[in-house]
Image (cartoon, rainbow, N blue to C red; front, side):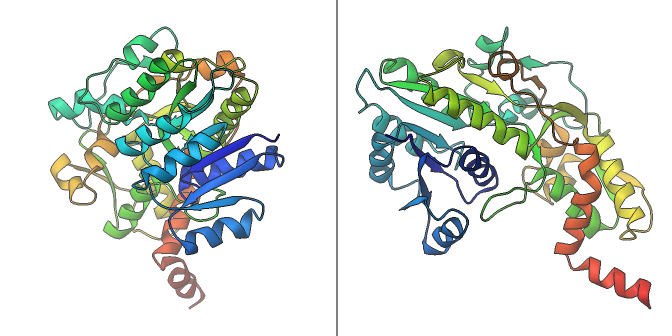
Length: 350
């Protein structure tokens, strides 16, 4: 019998790229995707003719439970904070017999590490605190309930402990994700593209406060390779991966300070002729919050970690280009979306 895989978020940025990586590596898998409507379903079907479609949303908990019960592996990429969906998927997996446990690979995020800066409202300043998923996994899996994503992380980890013979869980926590996705619908991330978009709209670069806050980053294709390795480990009955309370995986290829990225974005926008200078201005948390409600956290709080577990156990290693190399293409893509590229070309021609 082929491995049955149920995927949520297949038309999203993360899930769409993950399904690309997984299906291209394993055409033999029997894949079902949750899709919201026929328009979304058509996009998935146009790229993957053999994929089955389950029509519904994360609020359709009976459907989620049914699909999870029928699947060997659930890859949940749709929403990091939906408690009802996570509980429904776990209930479905709990229907598995003891000799054939079901696997849940849940997508969280390193936004969970922002909680201290959020509590103190400290933005734009550096923190020396770096979390890791190896020696420090106990700290990571016991963060305060006030931390973003912690509500569902707790549900997923507890689900694996409460029904350990029937359910094996893993949490994947990506940081800033960059690069063009390869999925059937949304191929755009948020943090870097939005930084480029607002730089172009405001016609100058900007940073939050002193621009010293750190974030880790990962190319979307490298993140998808981690999902693939975890899926393959699940197919092997668990493989070399650790699960449940030891199944927490950061994913990063390095880190950056936001002021440095802001400077690179402004420089690229200036070199491409979209803004008049590469100046970067300092904005307060209140000022950037007018651009996006999460902007103070996106570009001004600290989220620092080391992805040790995937490297040690699964042989995962990022190979795609760095975020610094991605910046010029990100700026150009946002300029094109804003209609600036054609106008600029016409100006040069004239």
